[in-house]
Image (cartoon, rainbow, N blue to C red):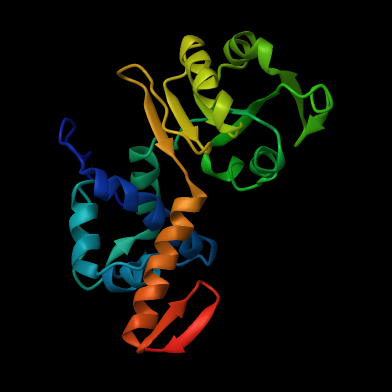
Length: 232
């Protein structure tokens, strides 16, 4: 690996760039799996679904500019992005709500290879509490603070019904968790200094429906009654 000077600290990275870094990392890790040593900005941009100028600007925020005629060193760029995203250390995760979604998240095998460890599972259903999911015993939600602290949880995931999500969020905060991923269909109110990322699958589907309708309109066809397409 070629030695490079460290990226100057204190220089902010735009939120839009941060949002694209995991996409670049996924593409780079696929190249790494194929033992590809270098990649051009054009090839990496195509794999990530962005234009090459945007990719080069994004990576410049990390202090990585590539080498003319060679491109980027895959291994080094994986390290740079992983470091910037905080993935060079282990992050303990607690999931509250072990219904269908929570169970699927717990069973997902991709977290471990990306620096995330499912350390705690929590639920209120007596039929679920005490069961083992993904090699972790489900604890009762009433013991959230105790379990979160003892497991050293850094990130809380909320997969509960909307009615209980706010209370769970505040209890996570009370236990010292300042990073929350929320799958519940509700906007959470948390103290300043707590980061919340919301994942709303229904909103994503509605956005896809909007674009599908625009494409249909462009073809001279428009959805009628939400059941089919007829010529305008």
